[in-house]
Amino acid sequence: MIARELLIINRLGLHARAAAKLVATASRFSASIKLQKDGKSADAKSIMAVMMLAAGKGSHLTVQCDGEDEAASLAAVEALIQDRFGEDE
Image (cartoon, rainbow, N blue to C red; front, top):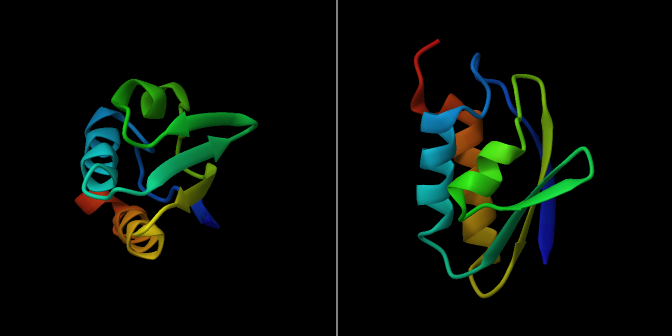
């Protein structure tokens, strides 16, 4: 298992469109991917669970990946977040 803390930097935070992109990215991998924020945990492959985290701009998320492709899955999620979910700011 590997984990990394990431900062949500896009202006609107983890809103519906961003959450959908995160779920689509996570779903490409076989690894289990969990997000944690303020003591709450969510399966990164579940749109409802991700939305329930209510992660606004400036939120710190811990991303935990466990499985055969854990390194690639963490890198993909990190790249998506650092790219502000592909949104123009």
